[in-house]
Image (cartoon, rainbow, N blue to C red; front, side, top):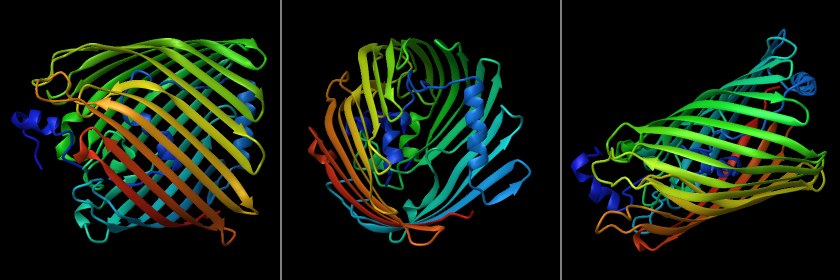
Length: 434
C-alpha cells in the first residue's frame, strides 16, 4: 500500500490501518526503546582495573563452538513454532495462523588487549506464515550488537552499533488493526560513550546516531534520523548509594513532511541503591521538553512538556527465585501524532521450580494517550494495553533445550474498532553448539 501525502489526515485520524507478532521477556522490557527519545541513550557503565579484571574472567568462562587463539564464537541455532489466533491484532478481522521461526544466534568476542574487548551478538531468523505468506519476513533478534570496549586508566570508552528488525504489532501498545507481517521497523543505533571513574564520582558522556525505518510503506512517514546526547554525573553518597544528575538532548528529522521535526531536552535526578549483592533499586525523576518545528503539512507544531519518572527494582531471593519491577511515566515520539504519553508497570518473576526446569512470567501494562488531538475532527486516542506471558524451559539433553511459551495481549480503547485480544502459543527447540 503506497502512502499518499494528500490522504494523510484521513489515514491518521483513523488511527491505524495496519501490521506484527511475539516478543518474549527481553523484547517487552525493551518496548520503550523502539521510539527515538531524548532519554534513549541513558545507561550505566564502570571503568578501571576491577572492571577490566571482571571482563577477563568473563571472556575466559564464556562457552564457545569455535576458538582460534583468543577469538571465541558460540553458535546457537533454534527452531520455533507459534500459533497466533489474531495476527491482524484486530477486533473486526481477526485471523489465525501457524508461524515457523528458525533462527541462528552468534555470540563472538576477541580481546585486542588485556583491557580492550571486541564483542558481537546477533540473531538472524525468518518468520514463515503457513496461510498468509505475504506476512513472512526476516527477523533480527532484539539485542543484536557489535561493541568495542577500551580502557585507559580511569576511563572506559564504549563503541557500539546496536540493531534490530522487529515485526510485532502486538508488542507496540500504540498500534492496532495492523497485521503481524505488515508492521515492523529496522532500527540502528551507533555511537560511543565515555565513563570517567573517580571512585566516589562517575562522569558519563554519550552520543548516538539513530536511524529508524518502517518495513511497511503504510508507515514510511515515521522514517527518521535522530542525534542522541546524554550526560550524567553520579556521586557515591554512601557505600551502597550513588545519586546524581542526568541531562539529555535529541534532534530528530523525518524523511516525509507528515510528523514534525523536533528538538527535545530533559533534565533530572537519579539514584542507585544496592543494599546487597542481590538487590538493586533505581529511581529516576525529571522534566522533558519537546520543541517542534512546523515541518508537517497536516499537524500544527505545538511544543509539549511533561515530567517523567521511573522506579526499577531487581531482587534475586535465591538461585531459584528472582523478580524485577519497573514502573513510571514517560513522554516519547509517537506514530499517529507527534508524541505519545503513557504510564506503565512491568513486573516479572523467574523461578526454577525443580531441577533444570525454569519458569518465567511477566506482566506489562500501559495506559497511554496519542493521536491528532490538535486537528479539528480528530480525537486523541486513550488506550489501555496489557501483555502477560508465561514460559517454561527444560534441557532434554546436555545441549538441547525445549521451551513452551504463552502470551496474552489485551487492548481497550475509546475507539472500539481499535480494541483486540490476541493469544500466542509457542514451542521452541534450542541447540547450543559448544
